[in-house]
Each structure stands twice: as C-alpha cells, then as structure tokens.
Image (cartoon, rainbow, N blue to C red):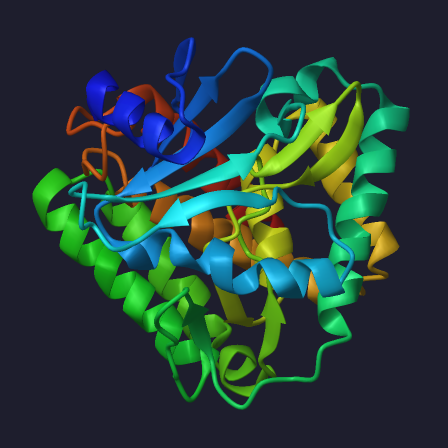
Length: 311
C-alpha cells in the first residue's frame, strides 16, 4: 500500500491529507494503519477482498446489542470503483493489544480483564444454539454438520501447508492425530454456539491496565466456545502472567475437569495450526522465512499440554 493511495482516500473521505501514517504490524489478514490528522486519529483497514473487511460492518449491530465496546465505522467503501481495494475508517480505541502489555500487568489488572472477557463469553452464550457449524464472515457462512468436519478440514490445511514448509515434524503429526481421534465423540456431539473466536493475545485493547474494547470483528464462529478459551491458553501457556489470566477465566466460567481438559485439547490444535503458518506469506506482516525459534517454542508448549492431558 502506497502513501499516495492513503492520502487520496483520506482526501475523499475527510477533505484533508493525514499529517502522519503509522502502519500496524499485528495480524495477517488486513493491512491496517493509524492515520493522524490535525485534531483526530482514525484506524484505516484495507483489503483487496471485501469479505475480509465486511464482517465488521455486518456484526457491529450485534456487538452493540450485546453491549460490548468496539470501534465505530466512520467511513467505508467496498466498490473498488476509485481504488483497487476496499477500505474502512474506524474510530480509534485507546490502548494496545493485550499481547503487547500483559507482562506489565498486575495480578489485579489481569483478573479484572478476565472478568470482562468472561462476560463477553456469557453474553454470546445467551444467544440460542445454531443448527450447523462453521465460520461466518461478512459475505459468507459455512454450514457443516459437526465440529468434527471443521477440525478435519483444519488438519488437511496443516498437512497441505506442511508439504511446502516441513515445519510440522512426525511427533507433532502423531500428537495431532491422537488428539483428534481420542476426542472424536466429543467433537461429534457438541452443540454449536455463536462466539467471537479471535480473542487470545490480540484484538483485546488494554488502556491503563484495563479492558477498553474489542477490535477486528470480521469473523464469528459457530462451534464450541471452549475453543476460544483454548486459543487463550495456547497464547499464554507457560507464561506467568498469562496463566493467572487464563486460570481466572476458567474459574469465572466454572469449567469442570473435563471442560478444562477440552480447553487444553483446543490449545494443542491451535498451536499446531499456528506452527503450520510459519513460512506461509499471507500479507506484508507475514514472511516465507521460517522462524525456527518460534516453531521450537510452540512445539515445547504442545508437548507440555499433551503431557498434561495424558497424565
């Protein structure tokens, strides 16, 4: 994305050029910038495909209804008539992603944030169960008969990526197969609930140690909301601050021992999926260069979690 394109978009929407453009490097889907004007700042999100942005437009009323703080859409255009991309300008929520500040937070801060995240799960869980499973974007909705189908699709994605990169070794493949096979009955029986799944280390804005809202609302999931808690565990397993945070969420959700085990299963599945992303270029935030230190670190997390569910 060139500065002159951003300047032109800003001139069209706000009749002035930005004084400063700051590119955000978190995320592998959309190109994101903070654009600063004389008296205001907005978040600009850009993608060549409407589907990757339009969920924020579609789901914003639901988050409002559930009284969950999110950015507001200030301006948007998906026509690609004047530019070769779709874009959204959003109000800026003050703060930083949880993953950038968690090491600075006190136990009191972490438990306070956990209360907010647990409340978000509770609000979504009040919505009646769905008839089918799968992701929902702004334009498309998957309709699978069971969660098992989705997990097997994710497994195939992992295998396809691994043919190009070789980052998933035989031990990780063995663990992947065993975890899926052992819990197949659970995946077939679980009821589909609507939930916001991308709520682990990013998209949670923290300002002065407190929760200040969610960002990046483009996709929702029909499935097992414990998977979202598993993502949180996958992000923070072995991290002192992160474990205070995830344990408080599980306590607030009143998870029993079997549910806690399922959370660990989802953490393993997410970690292996994230490892498979190494060496795959999604956008300018990602690279075809494999970070082997990251691969080894996540593999250690997988092995630790697998040992826990086996013993």
